[in-house]
Image (cartoon, rainbow, N blue to C red; front, side, top):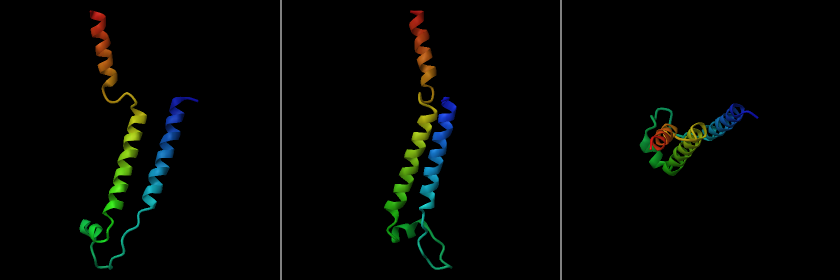
Length: 89
């Protein structure tokens, strides 16, 4: 199997995971004229739930980034520079 097909498959799996996470969002029930603000999350006791979703999205983003850039930004270039320095003596 080619690596680009595997990357596309894993991207699809991550997209499904993120979609399922978003589908689980439930807005707190307030009156029709009420404009929700961040303080309402505190009043409803939803801060831990909110931050767990944020943390989950951050972990998925880090996993996705590491999946597409396994050597990290600039690591390959620094390794090549080190190799050139070693060759020069």
